[in-house]
Image (cartoon, rainbow, N blue to C red; front, top):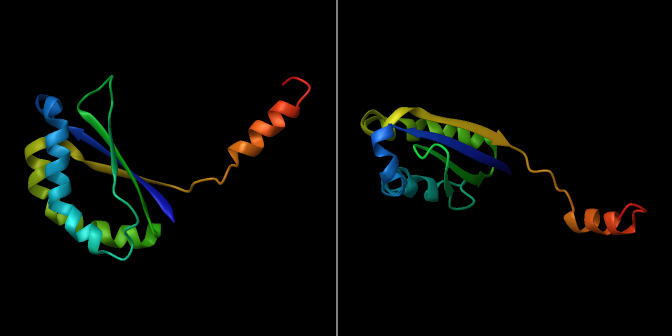
Length: 115
């Protein structure tokens, strides 16, 4: 499993409409994503407070390879959306989650002479 993070940069004049535009984008690409065998969960959207025209989207996918194949189809669907609302096409980065046991870390900190 891979965590996918998309960085969307809206044109500045559309920053106040970020919620509506991200919903519109999801309406364009969501149905195909939900039907794909690589889909694992709905995306979560985050608007930067310091740069409101910038939106980050995060979700998991079965594998990077499967996502890279899938995303090529999405790009074709998003051409008009990019041209109308975005300063550039989205940028995509992939992350592997590290299985850190935060409870074990808390236990060790409590047992530490400094804790």
